[in-house]
Length: 165
Image 1 (tube, rainbow, N blue to C red):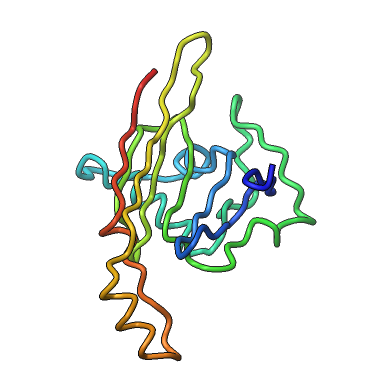
Image 2 (image 1 turned 90 degrees about the vertical axis):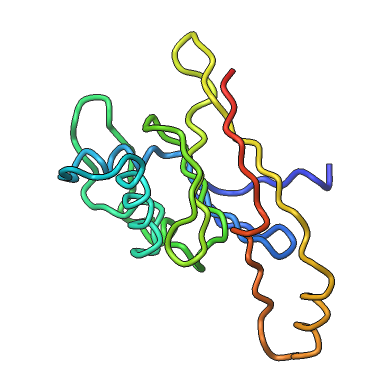
């Protein structure tokens, strides 16, 4: 089927004007195991963890991986360049065992943790994302200014709903 594309893990793809970055590795959980925090507002810890991915331009922003039970990851150091982010994504999709969340972080990137679809023998959660089209006026104004990139403002056009099964 022409509409189905296979991509590597992790990957950065572009759908129309929207750049989406994702990985299936629970790097958020691995990163949180090595972080120390104290008296943070609810929800800020996970957002701060997600900002590390953007700041370090990597889908696995730590080395070596944690060697804690249940957190094993097969990370080939020779392929570390495959974990780099070529551009800052508009949407950063990082499924994790940590709390499900969708939030605007670092410079306009929308971070989404949909959780896992299955948790043991129970149903988990998933995310439904609706991205509204850009306004025609904005496209026309941007096209008249030929050399400049169009500001996509995905964070203002997206609606994310995390649903439980």
